[in-house]
Length: 482
Image 1 (cartoon, rainbow, N blue to C red):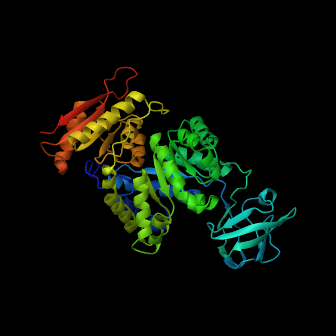
Image 2: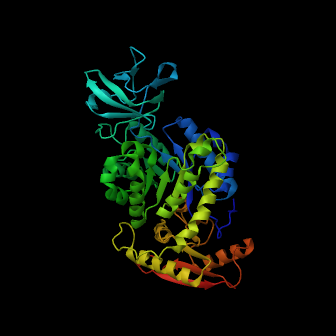
Image 3: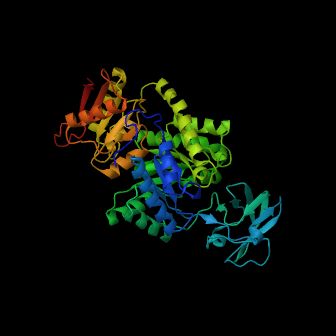
């Protein structure tokens, strides 16, 4: 189906990732979210089963076809997430200084006994270790260990429920980052041709390389997103950013694993590194959390989204807001409105420094020429930048500059077009001829005049190449619209 979106004048440059769930199931609901501004849909394998995930992939693709826009799919692997077992009655109130026991297996002898999904827990806990439940709202400390139990005292009281998360900050875990279930889900996602797979609870660059080796063995074309949720990841963050195709700042578990006061600083540091390496970065968790129940966000949430954009995030991610919230479409529209209001402030900043010459996977000629094309487009007041990119690298070289004009990305590869859905400011345009610069520009101009986004006197800047061996993108063409 022909693409029907406004291909040149996009209201927001920051991309929106939305988690799929019961609140937005169905082709019509997903199509409405795409029209509202969603660029990437996330499928969380920690919830639901394979049949459910398969159904959602099929529905996302049908919705994208109906709307006529490229839309990407991100499959999020669960990783070694610990959860509480079933509690009698479904929940348990833990007052200050109460004692509870973690026990092996699934059977409990008293209401104060707790079980988890993590079999080695008792072996790996030690006296003095902290155990955090329910996203860190309830905190225990281990006071006594035996062969089959760990007795803990409540030092921060609260209510816990069955299957809620368990975090052990500072405890070294033996569980691999990529377990058997994750590997199985990754192979399924590759067979389905998804665009991104995210690895949860990454601890080192080696975890990213493990998934990349799995992808290489399968001969698949999928990019790896590393989720930063562990303090060990922060210690190896530069190597992780270099190894991954993109990063997610997963502030939920990260804010439990490290002091919550350190999360904003970690977020800024990660985003700076991603910008430096030209890697897309997603900021996630509780972006507009109150909109699960309310039609308006809090002022703090709106400010949080704006600051993530000003920090340099490529995308903001919605989790429960779209998966189980009462107002999924309204939440997407609100996020988009905040982006539209915030992004002009990026134009008040000094021009970005010249790109580095040693970014792995980026040809220095392409990077330098893209930088010059961005500066030229701004100086000439161009209506848009146009780039034909086989794998999306040239589009990334333009994206990191945070230019306040659209970058029209074209490619012969549908997979490349979908990956561009995550790149800040890049509008993937399908159906454009990219084998010849003149034909491509004629297509863009004809389309722009037809939909009213281009008129005589406008300018376009095309980033292209001379096709000399080894030169990649090494040419800039300025085109006046007549």
